[in-house]
Image (tube, rainbow, N blue to C red; front, side, top):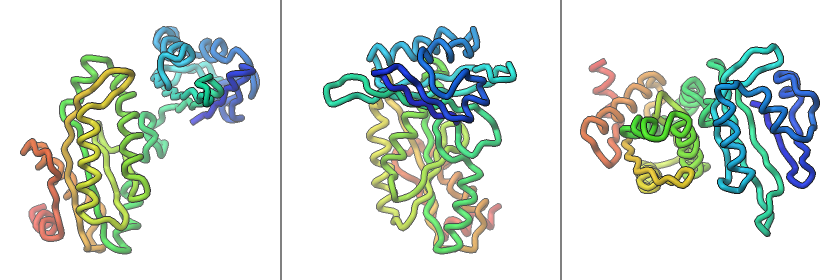
Length: 274
């Protein structure tokens, strides 16, 4: 991930040393950065990239999110995701435009779209937590999210997932950690919480996403969730994951609007069945 910061008063943009080297930028600080970066954007992606950037600088939107292919210093186009946000003064004047360009690689620790830790990190954190005191894990998925991609396009769908991740992360706060799983699935590993706390978190997710606004569009998103609450620190991480995903699948099949909760007794039955 390469971070950049642009001073809107001077027009000077600062880049990290790693960005300069990887992208072959002329300098770590430069003016007219849109022209420099625009020259690196793949011709097939340039129009949507420019529309996204122009929308922020015209104050039509507060942030940008764009997936495209960018040319690196070796002349190879690689997939990336650019995120940016305009910071305003108290008077509403643009002061700083800051953001990042994340190169999408399969071996990176964070998911490129949501900036959340991925499945491997979840397993590692779960293994460490359950040894100490068991664990409380929630899995959440979004019903029929493919309709968002069909109606608005995959770039909009990716931005929606990013906005959802930011919202969910703010709700979870210090109570736990949020992860990106497969597709539209999210995992939450909760610390020192009770089942009542998980129900409260899920209710906040459900109520906000029922009328979730992205770039002025209101999306009626329907979620479902499963939970495993176990005090058994000896159960394997894979069994924990299998159980919470089974609870999630049960919620999907029942079209439940409440959490499906598995406990130690359910987990033991599930383990024997497996």
